[in-house]
Length: 322
Image (cartoon, rainbow, N blue to C red; front, side, top):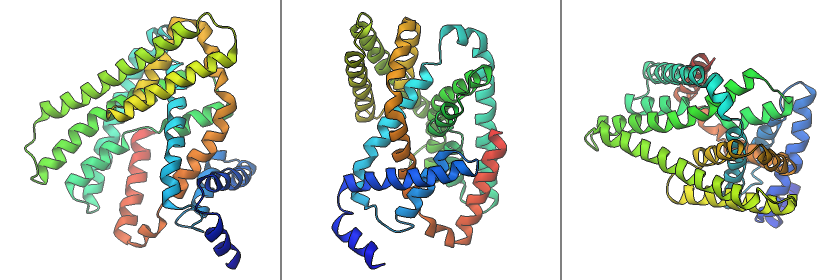
């Protein structure tokens, strides 16, 4: 314990030390996870738990806040990768089925989780918000596992399509659920049209930002052959798309999915842009999932009612999704 106290006192204040811990401990646990046939991201999350506030407490909250930028960048790259799978050819082949599957699993998950949480004792206004959140599909874990397995084919096309539409659908669903919950609490009068307008405007503005950024990358890189120049320009516009979306309260995921979709449909040459991200992604994934683990507060599960609600949430969400 004395060693841990010395480390915490002398080094834990530095954000680079926190990043180093996440990479090194994450690598160790990632290797252990793969040895027992689990995805490396399971090890990264466990590493975060061990060094985070529920474990050794070597990651300070201030450093966590500074490292959130890594999470934002990681999700931006993942969104571009997903958008890059949306060629018009694939949309013509699978678009209708993807839409049906997305709506079915999203609404079923929302209904099951919302009413299930009500049954275990949570107030309805909380249950509906958690139900809307449960309808979202985490793009990060999906993309990391698909890339690790090097999976291709119709299933992956469907999977990426559902993940993309799910994000837009969840924005709408959450807006409606939040407005409904607020009216139940007596804080505001329920105006469904206003909630829907905010949701659709967020989606449309996000698409607009992503489309402009995608066009900018296309016109500035299409004639270039130097991959370093292409990488600099592409990253610059992706960062710009992300920062504008966050600053305006839009969805950086939808914006960057649109960016990727615009690129892949304007020219097949833009696939090279996606390839330039590969040296960066493994490092970002390790920190991203370690942050997720470090944020876990295992102490809250000492309350039996929270533990019961947590199990119900996980079980019902799995039932709705799969």
